[in-house]
Length: 370
Image (cartoon, rainbow, N blue to C red; front, side, top):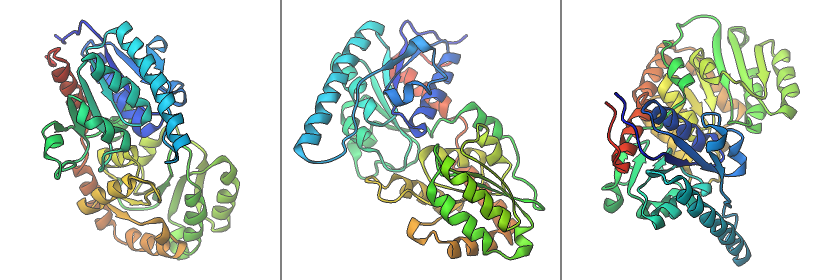
């Protein structure tokens, strides 16, 4: 019989898929244990919280630090202060057994309010390097869950709080992970995407690289590419000119299934993308988002590359000529692609949501799954 909590759990996440997807996966795992879950987030994410009942979604004021000048710092502090007061009231109203943060500045007011009220707290970090919001919160929380090992190798105090759980993935990803790596043959299926809104660099570089391939390889290709609305037309025309079969759209609701059907993926290396590539087990060419303060995507791609599951190309090296060369080599070596798929899968943790749910129950002191 599943344990039932006398109080709900409050999860809080920023407005991106990298923060919200694992929060939703945890909410599903906790609901299976009979535990009600509320979401505290910002206005960006409120409309995406499909795993939460509408009356369990709470918008809390937050702001991202955009600059170091005194005016920006004062403005951000003021908004976060309003959020802190709102979070104090929310926690007083729903009386959660624990508050769980998934990163992003919207997590700061609820987690800080929970620590002020003496409510147990846990943060989960999806990246190979801890983000700025979680870095601020880490010394103050009860426990820390990590996606990758050795995140706190040089920080023994924080390492004592840390538990390796992996990054929870959506049910659609777990279902896609049941599909074996596609057998070698025609067509050679290539999936290209650049995040929830697509990435212009993919539209600029990938079609140009495909146009440089030997015609015999182009005839083998079947490409699925996510592109921004304004780029769809030019990407489609480029593939038509190259006589390559391609499906282009701004959004694919079934991206995990398309990932599972692919021989190779070209993508950014955000936390959700790397978690899903690892869970499903697909080889990839990863192009980290440049200029990020934390360089989290660079570190994420590095973890997958060191395991043998990906090739990491920094954006300055992501040229049509370089990509064409990589594609020629990989397409000519199905054994290497299959080995990369297995290596990526070795990092995947399909049970991450359950592992994290067990840790939440432990931190909250409300029992474990029976």
